[in-house]
Length: 140
Picture (cartoon, one colour):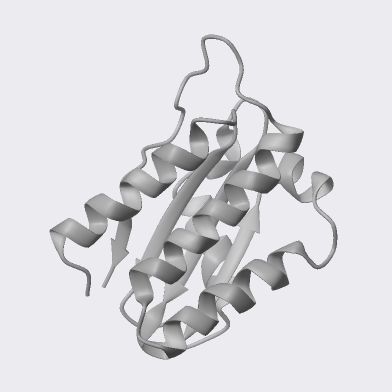
């Protein structure tokens, strides 16, 4: 799937995006996604207990580059703060990179777009605590 250097680059993208927000962003890269990526994303979101952040502002970017599938899901606080087409815009941009074989660049772009959105609704707070890890989750 992804090499250590690429995983480190994605973790850095997450840290950079989160540096301006109290929101929490996680990325899950799946080897395969046989079904609906949105269903898979929600399942992973709950499994990772991303719905337990203090401000309900967690976002999961779920991607299966091999299948060129992706989904972005946000907890209640995030979902209520987004416009209807935001997730679709971010997904379309990510998938356009995937079709060119630019997986890491596409995920990084998605992380950046999500970070821009959530910093407006959930700006960084003094003494902000990173509630969820910044490492990329790899799903076999």
